[in-house]
Amino acid sequence: MIRVGTPSTFNLAYGNTGLNDAYFARLWLTFPTANLSYQIGTTLTQPQITGNPIDVSAVPPDVKVGSQTIVPLIVPVVPAGGSGSIPIVFTAPILGTDIPLKTWINPAA
Image (tube, rainbow, N blue to C red):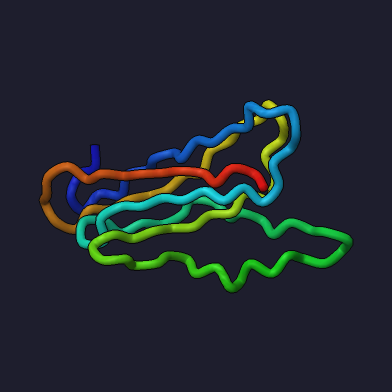
């Protein structure tokens, strides 16, 4: 439950049930733009490949599409059989009804 004006932390859980490590896992989060503000509660570090950082600066922190906010997140590596979570702090500025949060992950290429 999110109370009006009170930050509430939710954890976006993810995992890898496969036999291989998943590199650069793309997680997505969407929620109504008008109802919520958010803050990612952790920093996802930039992975290193051959000594050069991968430039993900072209990925915007979020995208507004109609009445929805879409937040792209990149997890550098999810080990085979591993899992983790990303804390996200939501604040609802107004009293409203249900606030649908949706998440999904792109399969490894």
